[in-house]
Amino acid sequence: MPANYSGTWDIVDNQNFEGYMVALGIDFATRKIARMLKPQKVFEQDGDSFLIKTFTTFRNYSCSFKIGEEFEEITKGLDNRKCQTTVNWDNDKLVCVQKGEKKNRGWTHWMEGDTLYLELRCEDQTCKQTYKKTA
Ligand code: ECB
Image (cartoon, rainbow, N blue to C red; front, side, top):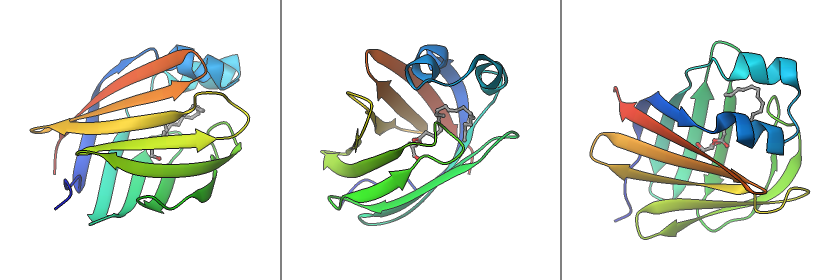
């Protein structure tokens, strides 16, 4: 049985989001807005099938995938790039690799109790986010 991430998660900490956005080439004006946001994640999971929705007052993003199956991800409303993306289990961690123009791009999620962690990586930058389960 894989871990179950289903639920609603609210951000409580966001470290180096600025560095991650700079690595993605996000312009100053957009970064200024984005760094004020308090994202909420809603995970819908059925075994190895995922829908992850990220909501903010500025923009929303959603991504669906099956573990181990590469897909084309267009990061619409984020940096608007095309990636060849794969998500795999590493024990109960979700490890995503986003192949494309940017080196070392991807993310990892893991849970400890009602806390959800997310590391977002691009080039030499890592953003570390923490969420608490609210539903
Ligand atoms: C949609 C929330 C953020 C909106 C910020 C708007 C503009 C900034 C542009 C680019 C910043 C790059 C990424 C934003 C960071 C997080 C959004 C979702 C990141 C992601 O890939 O989440 C994964 C893992 O939970 C699932 O899609």
